[in-house]
Image (cartoon, rainbow, N blue to C red; front, side, top):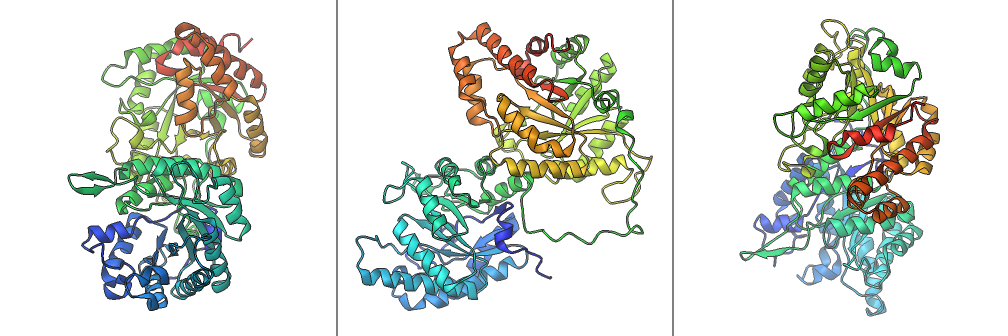
Length: 617
């Protein structure tokens, strides 16, 4: 197979999933701790290759060589100091064989154990020499990038960087350090200083690895963004604990799913694992990366099909003819949608009555989420059908990529159209780990962009295989989401541009509490010419505000807003203050958007009407 990978420097501007631990897996697979792990590249290559293969199968975009300790100082402890070149060359070649064209190879270089300032000058010269020997052998063996990882001292990693630049000119360098629980390295430097030093010394990317688990690594990574370079985060699975005589790492693979999502939201371009992580951890991270639009390997598109192979399709139905709601949007009318979801269980009565109350009061459309926050409840397709059949209410149906594979999504869309549902909000969806059933398996065959493309093709009468859709074409109005508070706003806007190209007609934002932020985002997306419905969520308490600000990715609640909720007395007074805040925001931007998307918390639909009171005057 031809190698279609783009250069690594270009690839790491996207999103890459690295592999996990090597040493802890070798130990689990029967290699005793007194054995030198790097020697296995020559003595038992099959066991190393199998671990590489398992990571590639799990979805890793990058696999690291088994050469972390293959420097002269560490090998000396086993009487193997003369094998630096052979072990690094063999390690790189093993990884290259497993990676093929499916993954990149990262040449792993770890610290020597010397402490600059204490070590003799001759030892420091030898350190530079062994780093140079490692770097040259790794690149000769097929490494696409050099990863200098788990360093604790800035002076030592500077020696390694200079050695890598000298021995392997032109090869990208990722410099990753380990921080203690005070978020400092060995000399007391914090993440900002560390990141700027690494940048100034000539590396291509900076990062944090190992440490005390995902939470510490994420906190450190957020501070390292000041360097302005691609960011890597590869924590261990927490500190090991002694359970019945066994040392076990406690961070589960499912937890790494949530970690990956939050880390990418925080701006990381490379995610992976360190000690205690396994192919299963990587499998969950790869799902998150697929959900968030990652995997930079598949960069060469297939040749476009000819008209003999694929039916091009008909012209889509004009937007104003697709539904009553779409007609309002097409005419430029200000529209209001309120989210209504059935409570868990069998009885949707309260939600149905709430929807009727809202529509009777003048709300244009009721939107129904698709298992929001990964909670289990009645399917939104069934609930939306009840809205139509019982009260003639026009719903706006959320479609997310989490729970259905491509076949299931196709069936879902066909079913929605068959029962008269014409308005869709297409999103990627929250991972199961955050919901009621964290052991549930996420699917994510398609993310929001893929789902939009499928629905848009169906609007032209084309099925996912490129064939004519039996029965004609659908007429969906397609809305999509936008996170104004995304940590990487550039990436969020690039994805929005892709969503527009995939067929999105309308933007519905996540809740916004900061008028200046919304104005900034509206200016950035003006070139798309898409109508925008601003997300509005009336807060109900100070605790509610703090939870949203700290725990929900992409949600930013300014300190002054949280302070107002803190000063509210609680209960009814807090809810009134939340409504006032929401009204101030909505009325301030009323002329800059084409609609409002209200998300009343905890089924308090009356709060939505209080926010909207007087808006139409």
